[in-house]
Length: 367
Image 1 (cartoon, one colour):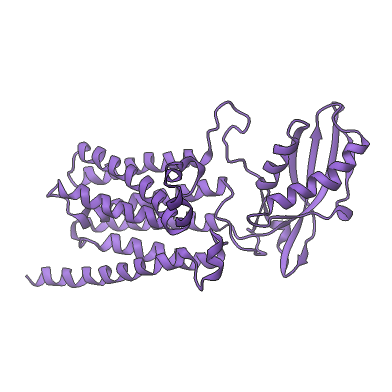
Image 2 (cartoon, one colour):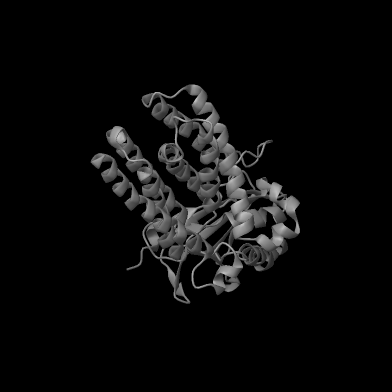
């Protein structure tokens, strides 16, 4: 059954104000929101457990540093070591992107050990059990930031919730022809087409040009050269659009205020919204962990919530990777990708700790 009429055309800008004076990105906003809301939740938890606000403040500093440093080093060492070891200064350029959740997890585990050393009333596993609650919440926000960046995309899929990502094309064509384009927008067409076993849905691209910028000759060059070049260059990382000059059905005209217009037809590749899957999963994991803590915190064996978090999160991550495109090219030559290889030891360690919490609990009851 074809679901292409129900697909989501994702043309969101990574910037909150695309043409504003300050390039504030949605990803940064979601990242900040993760820490802000996380601090509210951990404050509630600590107050309920009789801890002080000073502990919360200290924990927040540890978390921020551990998450950023761990995630950045994880990406650099796990995914592109040859680039960053040859140019270590590039590691500091975090604004260029490149964060890994596995690295963040390791960083947080180490940071919580350092934090607990100066607080005898908060053991390492005690604090890990509480902090993973807010880490799960933060993961939901981070993945929504990935959605706004149109990154960590899924493999092709023909589903009612499949997405077509068009921002890379929009960004490329505006970088070349931005001075002539007054407005650029997209809308869904009807029907679909199957090419090499992948489903593509028709999309109409509407251009509004600035006055006196496009005559007939320029319009022809735009449809036959500029657009196909922009499609080709935007597909270098992952293919999103197909453009056929002979089937583009160009329609030119003028807007109500007399500006030249052009509409062309392209085809968008339907994909899994993988980052949405992960965002929803981590949010539900947050709800689960918080509910368990709220109901059973007085009798909760140390390490139980942390092990449950690790097991669920990285088991899901392992299977979600089958629906996602590889992050770096060398993963194509591996039987599993890097995210899956890194998830396996974490799941095994989580299972070992999870079952150990039951044996420890039984021993304490016997004593």
